[in-house]
Amino acid sequence: MAQKMALQISIKQQLRMTQQLQQAIKLLQLSRLELIDTIQQELTENPTLEEVQESEGQFLHMQDGEPPAMPNDNADLQASLRNLDNNIAKTDNIDWDAYINQYQTHTPLPESSGKGFIGEELPSYEATLSAPPNLVEHLLRQVKLTRFDETQERIALEIIGNINEDGYLVAITLEEIAQNLDVDLDSVVYVQETIQEFDPIGVGSRDLRECLLAQAEILYPDNTLVRAIIETHIPHLERKNYEAIARAQKTTVDRVVRAARLIASLNPKPGIKYTDERPLYITPDVYVERNADGEYHVVINDDGLPKLRICSYYNDLIRCGTVSDAATYVREKMSNARWFLRSIQQRERTIYRVTEAIVQRQREFFEKGIHFLKPMVLKDIGDDTGLSESTISRVTTKKYVHTPQGTFELKFFFTSRISRMDSFGGEDLASAAVRERIRAIIAAEDPKRPLSDQKIGEILKEENIDIARRTVAKYREVLGILPSAQRKSI
Image (cartoon, rainbow, N blue to C red; front, side, top):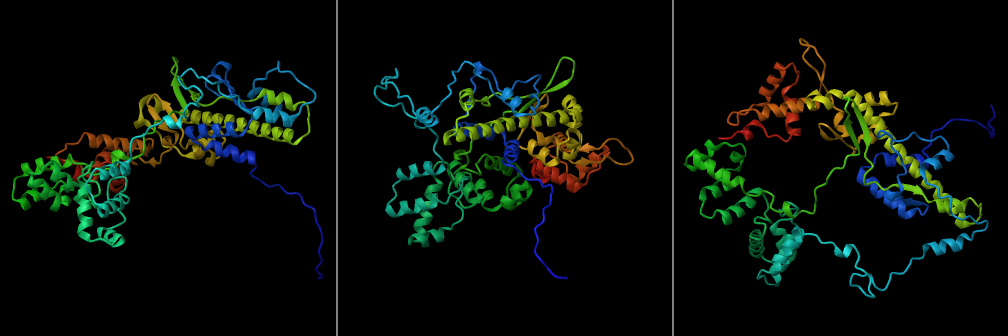
């Protein structure tokens, strides 16, 4: 058969990710703080968006906490997302280029601000901020107060530059520092030992033993037993094997216990208090509240979020139908603004639907607490809401809900299933509920005779919970609880 080239026309359906869909997906997976940053960035880049002041109302009006339904066409969308100013004068001929140039100009500041700055600009907000020194800055200040010569100061700078946030000298040895700076090792050792006496004590140590020993020599100089335990018996100390330490040091267990308490008062991470990290405070994205009738209802939290609308002045100007590059630019920005507002509205409505479905399935949890949390997976909520599992995963990540039982991430409610023993039957349990039960069992144990993982598993089986010892160990580690040998106290 002869081969030949020919043109053919065919029709087929294809799913494509439009720019608007990508934006909606991006907004859906943002946390509350990230959403605020994104909104502020959009306000900066899109001149057709403006922020509504508190006295002017909101661009989304909630009814019983539920976001309004999505409008179906552009006319309804505009009506729901902006507050029209019908009193703005309209002209038939608009010089867009002149208007844009005029709009971008700034009104000069008055000569006197009334705050003592006459003829001068006020200092920027950044210029008024202050921050505590970090660990490196704190150590460098102490280097300047120490009688180091030029060579010793170079060594100190090299050591401090390799100290991590916990206060340990890492990624380099003293021998390598001596070789890199072409100095003798004794000088490096002297400078390192001097830095260990800086505030915080023990900073610049190479390991835990060296760190604790540096602190003990300054804080407890006359207690030879404390130093001996740190130098030789840290493995026994971790397991609280006080008898072995007492035999090795030829002393009594009581003395060892008192020395162990002094060691426990030392700081294993001396640099941590100078870390740049600050605590993050959670603001819930949604509230679950109970009314007088005992019914739970969901309320979206929009406090602190900028309220947006499309600038009515631009909308009135664009209606004149002027054709120019500036007019085309404004029309494109207005279209982007509409999609941005639509995506925010869709995000809040999706969060509302998912939270409402969670409340329906986990009603016992909201009434009685974590022990009544039911096993639930993404597919369960997807079946209830008609949303895909990937959408459920995005909307529950980094989103928090405030409930009568406390504040939780939405992902907290999705837990694996732990079966009850067949001979007893009954509903399966959520893994989070089992972890909480393990926490309660350990909290009630005798500190002098802590329960092993095997014993905890046996107690749970007596309560009809089928769980293996290794699963108990895994859940205990997730809870941050030490093994029984390290929980033992005398």
